[in-house]
Amino acid sequence: MGPEVPIIVLILAIPTYFISKWLMARLNIGKEKNRKFLAILPTVILSPIIYVGVIMIWISSISYHAPVDFNKNEWNSNVEERFKMSEDIIDSELLTGKTQEEAIQLLGKDFITVTRNEIIYGLGVAPGLFNIDPDYLSIKFENGTVVNVNRYKG
Image (cartoon, rainbow, N blue to C red; front, side, top):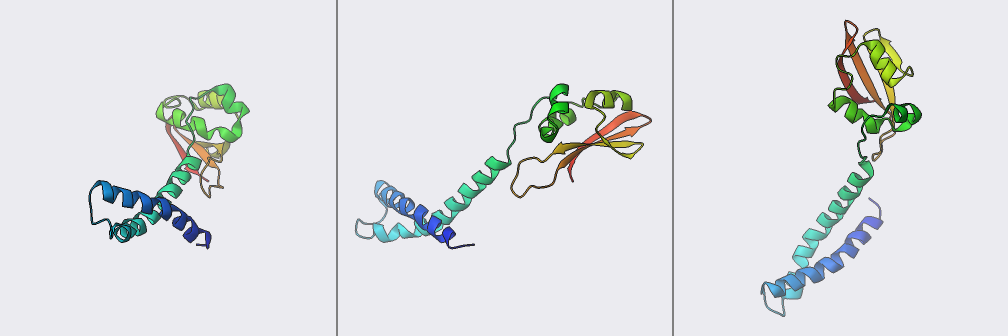
């Protein structure tokens, strides 16, 4: 925690103080002379909470990616953004019940063979704070048929 955090909290405290003082006047809390001192308490409590709230909103906004419906051409041409389509593949059960050959025909041959009962596709790196590891789509087979599709971090 560097020196910039207290400065930012202090900057947030100024409007919080005036809003608290105004609300106290509107709600007729305290007397005119002591409102400026009474407004300090909510300011001290609310300013760090507002700061943390703003940080959480920022983290959520950089971690968000809109899911996209599966598109075979987009899947094959934009390998680094496959993570956007992975949710649709899993949720729609697009591959469930397909044979291994049908799954490979649909998703392409650029997979990693783990075992003869599992193949993995790279999905690229999904946006997120401190996220540097790529995601993968694991497709498991039983008797040559897809039985499970999962997404996981590498």
